[in-house]
Image (cartoon, rainbow, N blue to C red; front, side, top):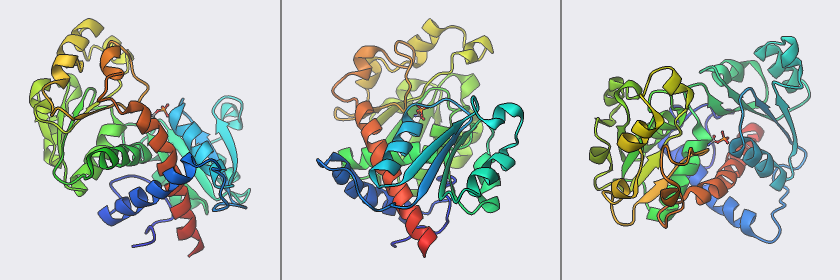
Length: 309
Ligand code: CP
């Protein structure tokens, strides 16, 4: 397989296993380019990418912009503040306006699930989902998969424990779709109010005790807790969350000795995990950030091939 099937990257639910492997294989080459002395290539010369973010971001937005620039692509960015979105322009009118400027890629983050899927058939540009509500964050999942495969040599047969606010997490959803397709077993744990039992129907193992999810795991992934969830009464207090659901050194020791500690970021130090775990030898959080650029280079490169075919 040498080509993606769709002009858009909407979610891990839509990607077949062979397409995921193609992106991960391509990202390996992209990482070499990125880490070479000269990271400028001409793969996307004459193309243009616009990031359209209705929510805040550091990693995703900057890594897409860098990925595009490293391959010679022109870039621009639009946020809610400072654009005509503030004047009430609709999502569709905004996207069509960007599209009519001969844009090749629109990278969108939006608080509503399905926003990228709504736009995809309505524009010529490739729509890339950079996070839609609680639905999916496919390029986060791709960089997570890349990091796991790079460090552990495989994805098949891994035990991956995802801990935290599973209900509201697009990262958990994308990883669940992807890891199941690639042969890993996914265990999820968190407060009962953030742990939908329906997740069991997707093939995930739902654990009410964090220890049960982490025991013997190859990967332990923390998820960011949105602190406004406490105000909504979904967990009693930050110290209690940290005590019962935080990834402490003792919890991490339940995993395999060489298990990877992952977090999509941004992290709340002392809530999802203490700083000593964030910085421990098993932590690959910084490598996830680096791999995010390589994976996004691969996505742009492969979508461009698909557009030209
Ligand atoms: N992991 C992630 O999506 O981070 P940002 O919100 O900083 O993009």
